[in-house]
Amino acid sequence: MEDTTYSRFLSRAIPAFFSLPFAIVALSVAFGPARFDAASYHGSGFFLFALAFGATIAGYAALSFTLSRQKAVTFLACASVTCAALATVSVLAGAGLHRDFFSAAFQYAMALPALYVVQAQKVFYRSMQKRAITVLSHAGFVIAAFYLEWIMLMGYAIATRAEPRPIESMIYNVYNIFLTIELFISARTLGRFRKNRVEITPSLMRLDGKDITQLAGVKRTRLLYAFSTAEGRRLRCPEIQRLLYGVNSGEDTDTAASGPECSRCDPESAKAAQCGRYRSTYNSILELKKLIEFLEVGTIVTGENRRHVLEDGWRLVAFDGARIKAIEQIPGELSGK
Image (cartoon, rainbow, N blue to C red; front, side, top):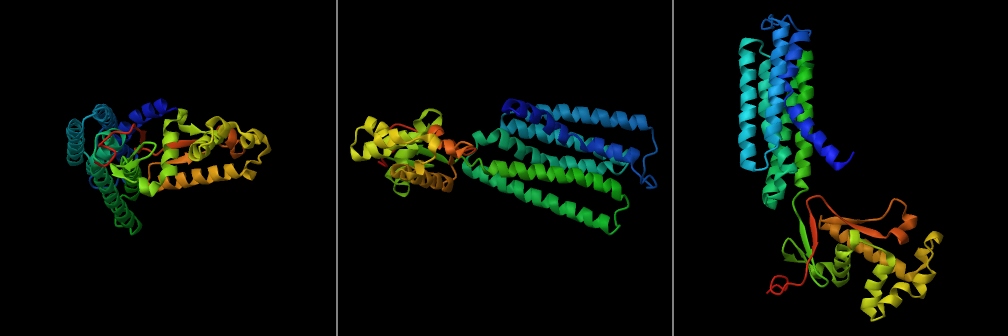
């Protein structure tokens, strides 16, 4: 599924999911087995269906509008009003129709922080500070833990037969489980958007503004810069040979790339490992891969078939939310002055 198709799917699925509580309760009240409850609904089934349909459609439209807001303040205001309105309708239905609708009100209240975390990991992380992203991600985990505790308490009540409507309660709990999972996944995704930023020149590397050139080393700094500036962020073995040997040893770059050792290397024979320079190249790639993975900014990948590594080369891939940016030497900014 392409990104655009997946994004369109999410833009419809998320508001649909969060608008479901009233309809779930209405269907459980209408068709649930526990009609002996003293507060059971005895009115028209058509009216109940029409009310549930109307509340769901209105909730879906309001939540779709809310999730289209790009500014945090506007989104929070729209989400608060929408969830409060849906919860109010559920409370009124609980007081006048059936007390199970109070469960829908509770679920709409639970949806508000989940909605904010979902929107933050989709939109707001671009403008949020790293510390704010971390705090909100951790808050999402804490709230998800509270939701999980509530689900466990409800499960205990059902298991001990303290809950008079076990089937209906299990249905509501299933929705709560999916809500908790959604909140947990969104919080985890948001936590990865801590926006670690690496700025790189041929001789200097900075992580979030801090000079880490000594930690990275000259060779890995130069290699990462080469990856960052290469087309498609991909380098092949001869290009890395030229970087590591042609520059370091003073050897002519064309000779380094197409000299005797490289000219005799047959990608189909899979004997590259017998080449001393290839082994050195591979070790350099592995060292760089370990470094940028440790810094949580990216990794180095090969194609699906590693036997074609000489033809396909290696590719630099940045992690979600991280940036690896090649820049020119800026006096004063990158020199630490």
